[in-house]
Image 1 (cartoon, rainbow, N blue to C red):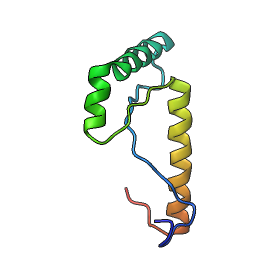
Image 2: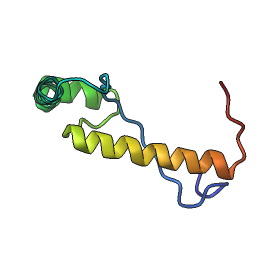
Image 3: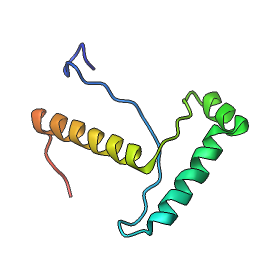
Length: 87
């Protein structure tokens, strides 16, 4: 995409869990710890790599920062490309 129309545009796919905004912090931390442990396990890591992905874990704060950064990136692309918003 950089060469064609969007200089400096880099993006990679990711997956994560979203919880309701008022979820208890202890529930968020438990899900994060459990997910990180699963991702770090050899079996899950091998399966993720077999699908062509890289297993990465992180904290809820890191996930939030990544999500917000990607949101800002795509908002800019949409604005600059004059892509009409849809319902």
